[in-house]
Each structure stands twice: as C-alpha cells, then as structure tokens.
Image 1 (cartoon, helix red, strand yellow):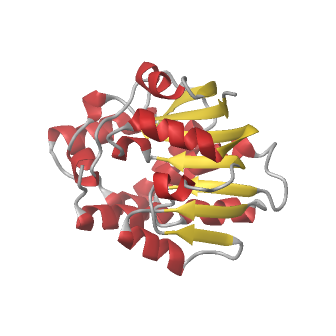
Image 2 (tube, rainbow, N blue to C red):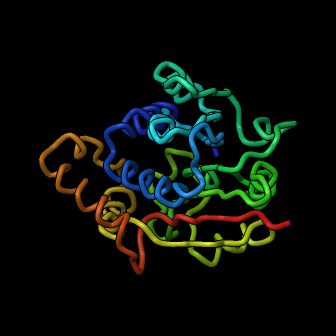
Length: 236
C-alpha cells in the first residue's frame, strides 16, 4: 500500500524523540548483546530516519542498512555515524547477492510488504546460520486505523499470525508483547478519532512520563500490547 509521504516523513523525523521507539530499540539491543562483539556486522533492514543505527554503532556494531523511502533514507544518510553503510532500496534488492550476517534487525517493516511470507524467506537468507534476528511489527488488527493507513500498512499482527509467517524459516526463540500502556492512545487517536498519533507528546512533561513507562515496559513481560517483538534463529 502506498504511504502518505508527508505523514510518513513526519513519523520518521519524530523517531529520534519517540520514547516508544527508543525503548523498543534498547530492548532489541539487550536481546542481541551476547552476540554483539566489537566490529560485528549488523544488517538493519528498514533503517527509517536512522536512529537505531546510532544506538547499534555505539554498542560497537558495524551497521549495514537499507531504506526504500526516499525522505527517510536521505535523513538517515545525512546523520549516519561512522561505521555505518546505507543503501536506498528494499529488502529484496538489499539481499540480492549479499552474504549473510550474524546479526539482523528489522523494525516495523513486515507490515509494509504485501507478501510478508516471501519477505520472511528473503530475511532468512540474510541471517547467518548460528546467527540471530530481531523483528518487530505492530500488533492487533483491532488497532488498525488512520496511522496504519497513512503509513501504508497492510496489516497488524497477533502472535499466531506472526508465527505462521516466520516459522517456515525461523525458530522463534523469544516472542513478546510491548506497549500495553499505548493501547488506549492508539485506539483513541487512530481508530476512534481517525487522526495521527500526538507526536508533540514526546516533547512535553507528559511525554517524559510516557517515556519512563515505555522504558519500564521494555523490561516487564506484558499480556498484550501495540507491538510484537521476536528474536529468531534461522532454520537450516
């Protein structure tokens, strides 16, 4: 589905100040820290505006990433840290002829792809045997609303639906919900009011409180949430 370029650009630009995304990225890095030796190559599929690249490089990784959205790619390229190589393309072009890496991250990409099962197969080819991937997706079709439409999402996921897509190619080592406190925010703005999320929240005192909640949620297992995060091991 075609995203709204203006809405998508604003959403990408906000990521650096988004406490929700920041806590999710920190969770990703905790899940990979045992394998993240200094200089280890990490593929970042769908870098967005590039904030995760900075976090991964600061942990010692060498990041090689891709991003198909023109505005997001330019933003990521303009602020790319040293030891970060970026390509303006989607996952299929990125994977073509590329050797697999020990570490692969794919945040909020699968929902943008019509053939998500095909994308999972391509992702499998990017992960070295014995390596690991961390993937996140938006959760719960009951929360599918204006935000998803503007960003060009095809779907949101449940654990069962996500496993159905991934398990032909990966062993799901860990799978958890994230963002339970964000459910009423997502439903009220995106579904009920049919508006975008309140991005200015991240710059306010209330946003600071929300950031602490998101950080706590990244440590505490939850029974439901607005995202699903999985750690994967490629099947032979």
